[in-house]
Image (cartoon, rainbow, N blue to C red; front, side, top):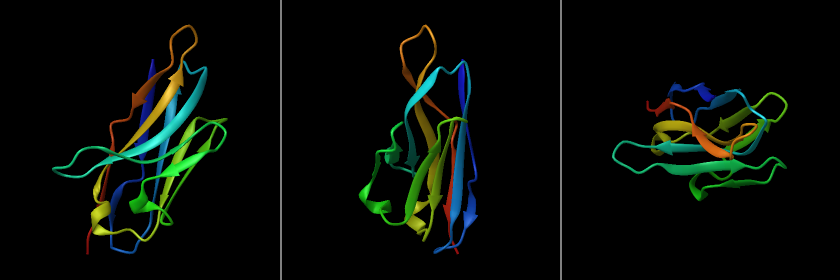
Length: 120
């Protein structure tokens, strides 16, 4: 009933920038917390950043001052602007959102992920 689709990943050199986008579609009544996670090879998935409906934001320490999360509530988009990228940022990035479908209990949905590779 709800799909999340990420875009914007790719190969970038250290110090470069990328902007990830995620759009939610389906029978959406409203969306609560939206977030970006990432999973590097051989590591567990970790929360990168999240943003509430009212705009309250938190980042994992390793991306503070480099990444910026934002959202468009009217169009169900969430973005992740990534600057000063490092090789350690290489991972598959996943969009996550808590979605309320009318008549159902709100639950979290995941996108399929987009690969970000930081390498020279």
